[in-house]
Image (cartoon, rainbow over all chains, first blue to last red; front, side):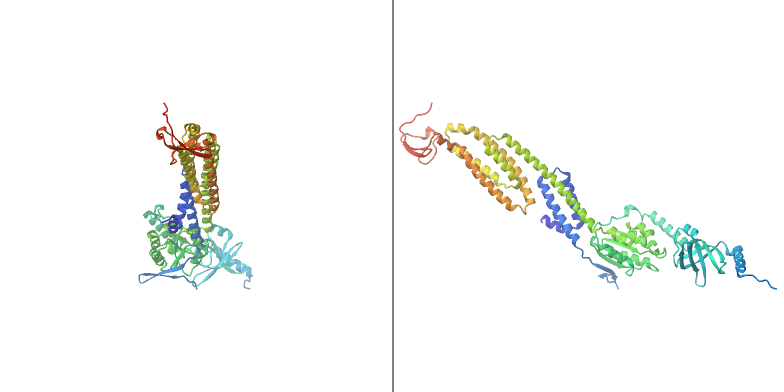
Length: 79
Length: 465
């Protein structure tokens, strides 16, 4: 699995946490250029993934009920 | 003649009667506030019960001591006296103190439950769960017809996107507590990440369900974090103490749970700014070491073409291609083979010093260029999109330069020696003859000069002492 594919599977929270960790690692210094570049590439992927999630604004508004032991959800409508 | 008095006199007598009456002074009256009118001098209202009504007034000074705002329909106990308003002949109740009726009992029940649950550990900070930072789905236990669900839907629209699942519940009146508990339990069977339990503002009676023990326990036992959002900011309920977080209002609950999108975006941007700054300092460090390397090479190199190569290396380091290493090696091999073929000892001496310097320099350049190439290659990959074409053309140019350099280097090498009066002897197969042992009397040999060759026969030979 490429890193891009890994990122694609991450939740927003995981992505932003990973991004934060990478930034801190790079800021701490003492790493070679290979790792620096790797961090940069990963960070860009993570940033893009986060943006993609943020751009998504479609949401469902539902109500949940239980009838005879089974859960039922339906779209919430107001009169 | 019977006594005739004025209306004023009459009302004054009645007023005096009232003021002297023990039963009409310093008494508590219970009733409900109705027709409340607010004036700068005080509040005027009717105090009524199911069968009767009396005008009442509470003046500004008494009002300011109350600590709460009397409202329409509020059930109260009022302390005061009955007085007649002489100009109108109307009597009214002058209120000194108002207590919300039933508040005493409620208050005691509230305090008792709070103490009990507190001792049991239901309010412990250690039990409080951390709210998910970016929930995908929010459950809401409230009335479907109330303002709360609308407020939450509206407030959350501009925030981090999450689905909303309402578990409709009665939030006041008989059965409200049970209904709220059912809602919390229902959402615990669903996949919501966090639950808001709430209702809008109202009287203490309206909010009472949130002070019920079963509601407190349902919140405590919820596997999913619960945010309470009951009434106004000043209203505190038992539910607020048990919940993992308390929101001042239902709108506030949405704001607590879901972060503002623009805020998240700027945080994201902040990370990228820090990242760029950090990578920038890595690059600066590299540039510095390139410069250092270059200056070293410049100082130590005695050969112009090597100096030129070191400059080329620096240039290439920005773009990079590991084939330069191969080119260097190739060059060195060529040099070695030329050297092997052309062994006249005089020429060898001529170039020995040169060779050593060249080889040492080549090796140093190989080592450092390999290092720089590796760095450069990686950097190239990171920015690879645009500059590929440019790099390709730089590389091509570099190769051409390398070719011409190689020619120059060869020019310095022993082949050149022929032009200076030396000749090279080979057998008929073209092999260079470097030892007398390889030549027999009667052999034919080829003598190579600068501008041609001649065949000669060996008539005698002599071994050097």
